[in-house]
Length: 177
Image 1 (tube, rainbow, N blue to C red):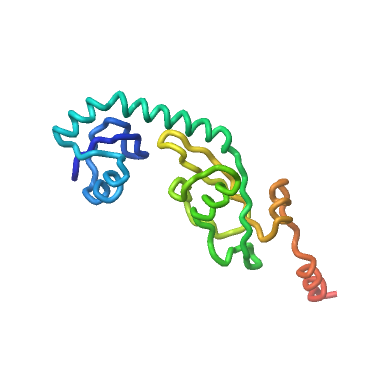
Image 2: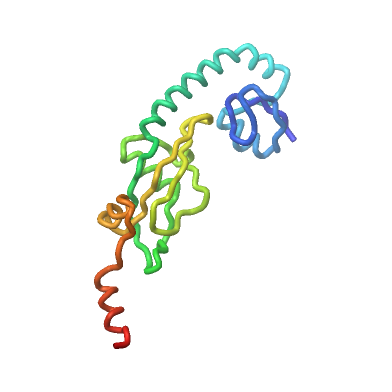
């Protein structure tokens, strides 16, 4: 285990200024390159204490900006058009990159690493997703995955899209009379 000083809040790990033990790979590959932590040496502890006020002020400023953007972004609904099979299963899946591009097109610049997908989106419908704007600020947006703009509009109103007319005709001709 490696001791590090957190330079910002890290979800499920700790708050700014805490000294925590993490696995070496997590520190080396994630926390240190992204400037989220420093190795807990005497020099770095002294540096952190000296710079603590400045780091906290920067963090509060970024948090305030994120909260401002979050207030505008909260509840946003983006439409993603995809092809799907008869049961509503997508032929591919919707990724964090697709969501980030759709939200950016809607006027808010976010990166794919800010999108939290609990599980891959592989079906049509409205899916609720979390966007992390700051370690302490996250908002929810809706991703409306549909085959057409008309279908997306119907789902947006809270209705389920009806079957395609061609499918209904096939069922009627196959039904026993």
